[in-house]
Image (cartoon, rainbow, N blue to C red; front, top):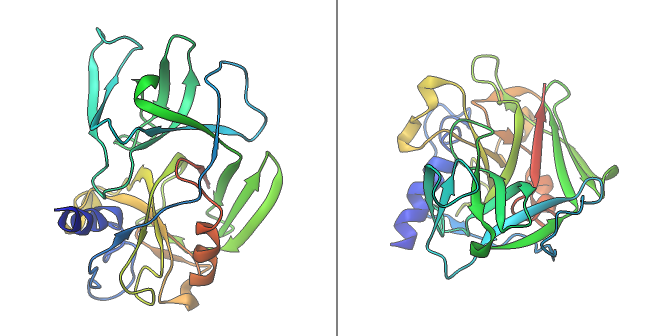
Length: 259
C-alpha cells in the first residue's frame, strides 16, 4: 500500500515533472520512489517571543496523529477548512510552516493545498514544534537558488532552470513538504526531488498525468538546460547541487520564489 501510494504521489509531486517539469518529448518512467529523511532541526519551546531574524518554526505532525483538522479560526467550534492525512500522500510526515503561534495552543500555518499561500489554524498538541535557521530564495530572472542561514549568512548558491513563459514557475512563499529519491538517480528528476507546498497556476497542468500540479525542486538528466527557462514550472538543479541541498535543508524550510 505504501509503495503504491508513493508511486501515485510522485506523479503528483512531479506533476509539472513527468512531462511537466521535464522537457522530454515523452513522459519519463517514474518507477517506485523512496521517501527519504531530511536533516533534523532543533526543538523549540512553545513561546510567542519573536524568533531571531531568518529563523522559522516548523510543525511536524506526531506519528500517533493520523490526521490533522485545519480550522478557519483558532477554535474547535470554528468552520473546518480541510482535514489532512498523516503521513501525507507520499508517505512523508505531514509538516507545516508556522505563520503565527498563540499561547493558548493554536498555530496559524501555511497549508500544502490550493490556493498557493493558503493558511489555517491547527492545534499545537498534534505536532512537534522545531526551529529552522534556513530559508531559500529562488530568483527566476537570475536563474539562481540561494540558501541563507540565521538571516543573511549565504551558505549555498547555484544556477537553476525554471518554467517557461507559457508555463511559469509560480511566485510567492512556499515551504518544503517532502523529500523523495527517484529510483534512477540519472533519470529525468535526478537523484532527489523536493515537493513544495505550491502548485502550478496553469490550468491545463493542474491534473497532468493524474497529479495535482505540485511544484518540485529536483535534479535533471539535461544539465545543459540549467540556467534557462525550460520547465513546466519546477525548479531544476545540477544533480551535484540538489544532492548538496539534501544535506542542509530540513522539511518545512520556507522557500521564497521571486520574479
